[in-house]
Length: 336
Image (tube, rainbow, N blue to C red):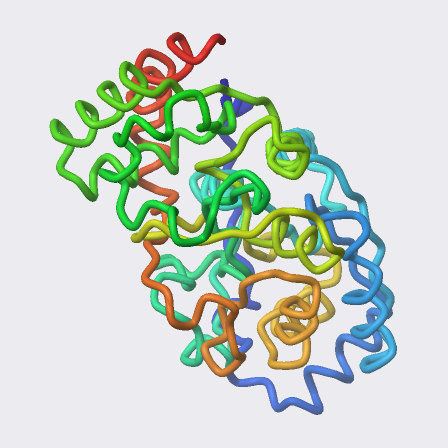
């Protein structure tokens, strides 16, 4: 199961950037960033989608982005380890919500005031302002269009209890955040009992990896998947695969975001990139790559859907509780 291993705590003094940033004239900020010349970004961003973003930024501002990319947990661990060793190499970090919130708690990040903050969707800006969501990863339901007719799709979670779904449902093996959010939307006791009942009646096969689960829907091995990221079936559908997606509301979304290190060696360049990622230009690029934007001015593929954001602070605080519940209710009965 997903665990975040935090190395020993360390504390560094706040730098002036957080309070000074709003006072920078745009041209002065740009000049300072260009004088620094580059920034170092640690990120878990999908490798294939990084070049369009960094190239656009570099072309616009003449500031180079030096990227170190790995999985979200490795990004977290490297950042924490370097801070503990007082090695200040990273300027900006872009990763998943739980890892970013952990960096906040470990006092790695600094508060930033961005001119784009007021234009973001509710929940994108954390109360402490030390990191901000740049895009959403929304769990939706996907189905094989040869095996399931659109008119037969469930309209609510309760409809999944119909015997016609027996042996046809699949779920990803590491989604306690999705599970807890759906459970709580039903009322905790009723929600847990719903999933117990669903597994008991119709079963839910468990697959490790969102891409694998999506591919198994395409292949027809899993007729209906409960938890795939929206961009996966959409991309496959556009290529002609026998897959489509729909939403059992509320859709559950997790965020990924960006923050600036307190001891960033290139703070002005980091701030410029931070603001760029929230700009209309970058957000439209993200939409073109099937991501869900957090800039409310940018048209979203889920604009007419009701969705709930996972609160990363609550998810961290209650991680053990919901991981254990997900394992007991879903995984053990789903073959893992």
